[in-house]
Image 1: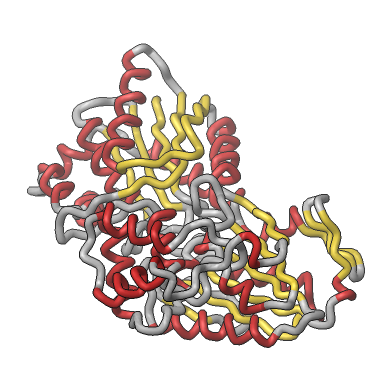
Image 2: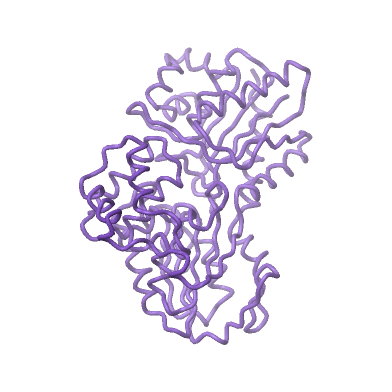
Length: 435
């Protein structure tokens, strides 16, 4: 089976999606500076000369290119910066950067969060704190509350992620274990003004969910956090449960609510729709008819993959050609074994099993940040021959899926998509090409 042309097309689509959602490009499109005036998306105008000092803090896997263009625009007005990104994502930075752990926090996360809080607290009443957020900030900025050690924060985060809990549910817990999330960074900056620019990796792009909402009021409560832990069925560390219970009993401060923070300025730069627009344009340029199934997909990775593969096969059987089914969103995985993988790789492996023995459909799933789960792959490819090729190498696809070991299976087939950090982070995209 000739796998070349379709895969070349899928790689090109991936690159086009990433390029369209680059944070530096999006920032330049939304912001324009003329002298001391900063015009933002034709929605508001700030006179930067009205502030004594500007401070820039930021976190996320795609924050370095965003910070670079922001610092270029704000120039000498910036009195200090504190930027935190994931390990391996700081390359090319011309300024100091904290590197930290993702998807679970590490010592770098503690250092980065502490420095951001220090800078926010140093801002005065006539200052402006500019916060830059991209996906991954919840883990990269870790400032656990007193009594909850980093190891316990890591443990509950890992267990929730492995349970299949959504990122909104995970963040409801993390915000109530944090001194920086859930509006607490903005509270630390008071009485300074706060201006936030965000690149969303959250379905719906709610400000309170992106990066655990460090600069906006938090609508969730300690009771919500306890409910998430209970519903997920995870065995959370005793220090975590004790703190959440104290909070629910009114013995620990709640996260700031709507009436406790002044109205902030918050601007969304790009999200999954931005990336899919780039993918759609590239597909049309390559002669495909793009069919956008959703830009807000959620649910079990395997279920979504099987549905997408089945839909593509059905269209192929009815004579469709040169069509491309496009799904955007963030699936969830319930880890059931000791293997290694991620949402996109699990989707691809499940799709491969559904496509077994068919012709004319090639599929790819990829994380726009280039990092799918705790692996170096962005995702992978599947077609009708994937399962047979695995069998020839002594690999049983169903067994690898059961052991949550999609990375090993796809790696054995040389079907992984490996890009390294892309410089953006706006959820995941799956594309099924019908040829």
